Structures are given as structure tokens and as C-alpha cells.
Length: 251
Image (cartoon, rainbow, N blue to C red; front, top):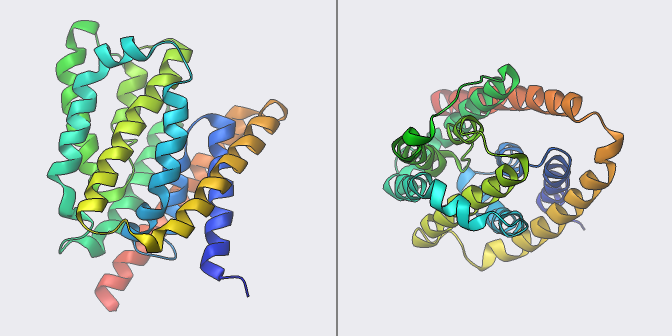
């Protein structure tokens, strides 16, 4: 018989990979949000971490801008790593039951900010100190939810990189973020043999979904797909937050 949880993981990562293939991001938010329906966020993150690292490593080294990105974004990356480590116990400590609530709220904020397309800019002389603060906040949030998109995505859009450099910068940022999360999980003993099979399945399905998404991207209207994807994230976020709140108060 097919393990229903394993079948669920296959479906989740095919979808998450497809989304990433079409719009270039979305693997952690989609996979974390959906997996959290069926398992604790710590278990979900242990499955997500390897596919997230490897898909982002590929994105990191695909372009010629890596040296310039590191020179420009090192305060952001350092702040991300430090913030993730400082809040390392959030998913495994006494507030672990609240993690689905934080994740749900974050998904809603991420989707609303993306839908509204808030536009602001950060002047080049201010990038270092603003980036450090943004990275630190993103790291703290990431350690609690497994997702690094807020407030880092608006910041990366605000510093006005050219398109190919921006895509590569996303790969660098999310690689650092997922490696920092992997360190937290390893220190907490959550990355072990039990996550090996789900992780391999998730990895294969992620790349399969990405290949399908990239193949059909030219046939879809990316902006329409992106809008409905974000609306779905709002619904999923509300469900996670409400369900977790109900469970805490009435379980």
C-alpha cells in the first residue's frame, strides 16, 4: 500500500516545484504551508530543507553576478544567518505549538504585500545598514516559520537590481537562509534517517515540478498565475492560523 503521507509529499512538491518553475520562486512558502496541514512545522521543514538548498544552489551559480552580489548583499546575508541562529529554539521550544499560527500569518502578509506591489527604493549608500536590519528580522522570522520572504523580498526589489542579477541574488539569499535553518535543525536533532526518504522524494518531485513549470511557462499568463497563487496563499495562511489557534485553545 502507498503511504498516504508520502503520496501527500509527492503532490505538495510537484505543485511547489511547478510554481517555482513558472514564476521563479515559491518552493518554501507553498511546501511549508501545505505540509503544515498534515504535520508539525519542524517535520515539514526537515523535509523541505534539502530540496530548498539544492534548487537554490542551482539558482545561485547559474549567472555571472555572484561576486558582485556577495559584495553588495553581505550585510543582508550576515543578518539573516545571525537572526536565524538567535531564534533557533522558536520551532522546538515552548512556543512550538504557535509555529503554524506564525506561518499562517506570514503567508498572508507575504501574499498581500506581493499582490499590492508596494514599491519603494533604498538608496545605494543606505543599503548596508538597511540590509543588515532586514536580514536580521528575516532570520528571526525564518527560524519561527521556515520561510524567509518577509521583509527580505520587498528589500531585494527595492535595491533595483537588473533582472538576471535579481534572480541570482534570490538564489544566494535563500541558499544562506536554508543552510542556516539546516544548522538549527541539525543542532536540535531533527535531521536524521527518518527524513531521508521523504527528503529524496521531495527533491525528485521538486525538480520534476520545476521542469514542468518551465516547460508550460510560455503557455501561461505569468501575472494571472501569480495572482491566483497569492490568493491561494492568503486562504492557506488564514486556514493554518485559525486551525492552530482553535487547536491550542480547545484541544
